[in-house]
Image (tube, rainbow, N blue to C red):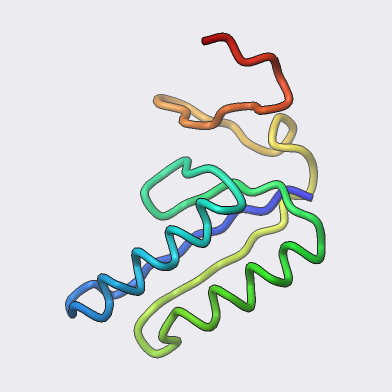
Length: 96
């Protein structure tokens, strides 16, 4: 399944900046960054459950925001990207 993970972490304190780095690291482990606080992830239901629990352990609900969007179809069918598109399709051949 394809999931869009978005977050907004309050970075006014050193603790908030540390939370932001931890949230980004967790997201980098399951998907690719397409904007500063937006990741596109291809995960199984089990992987999504793990990711959700890990992210919820990091964020402060009174200060931060986390949103997980299940895309109704594949990225190619669900996403219109204009301008810089940072997405790499790892199912396609990669030319170096």
